[in-house]
Length: 372
Ligand SMILES: O=C(O)CCC(=O)C(=O)O
Ligand SMILES: [Fe+2]
Image (cartoon, rainbow, N blue to C red; front, side, top):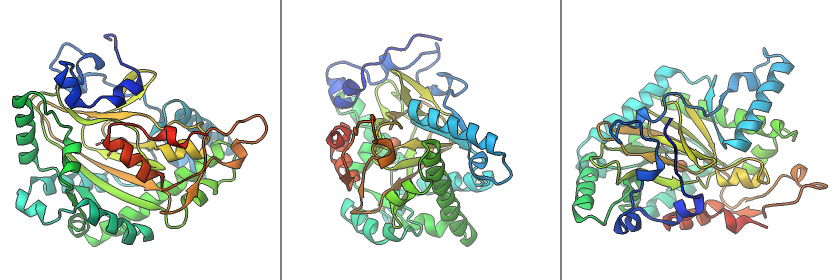
């Protein structure tokens, strides 16, 4: 495998693509492992993902022996402290249902822009929805509109002008386009019922297992998230890009969530570990720690930097489920993790996602604001 050369995270996160292009630097150029094929053919970067696999069924099923459960819990603790994420299997969500989500997402993004604009939401609308829908953890189906035609047009513009390169998702954020009801109405009734229930199960199993893996009371993280914890979905569309060497799908960032569950239909997502970028298996559900889990675990779990590459030939959809503590609820390191000789690394924080968002827009991480 070719050698990687990756700048430190602070450098990566402090530079915007625009600046890099102005200074003649390539966002991807030195950071990816080239396999001799087109840079856009990202699937060739690495064929098998080394991101740890965790069987959620082994963490919770009564049919599993204590020994097997202990082994899986240990794997989970190790995965979350080294990688900050895992590929989840045994989650009980049928493959056909996951395919359906991918398919409906793609269908939506194929609609003409006028159609998609009907579901557009401004950031203000988004906030209102957050307070109304999200508080009850019903089935808040929120998506970004990233029009394929407008997105590639914008990218063409950017490349022609040579210094206005955009990240697709930043571009989307700048336009403040969000959708919601479309997806709710697109799924048939069974699906609407199935999805939030199953996702809730994934969050419950994961939160309990994370606590047990640290020898804590199993409900402690669920309690920190609160009864009104938010589970929001964002549908992302990444159009093919003629210059994947210049344009990232999504810039390197860490999530401000408690944790995030990502479903994708194709390669592109990469996680940074020890200075190297690693892909995940496109079909697996990725459970990725956000900054708030790093805080609650007093730094034992790691909220990893990740990014999405552009692809020369293929488009890509992903659905990110953001699981975040209840609005206005204070969270902090679990007491059991700061006793005795274990120093407290993080302070208690409230509405951290908002702080994270402010820094994210400037291409920075916010975790230092929570350091003791
Ligand atoms: O599109 C993806 O696979 C990742 C999305 C992501 O990292 C995010 O929305 O925070
Ligand atoms: Fe993310």
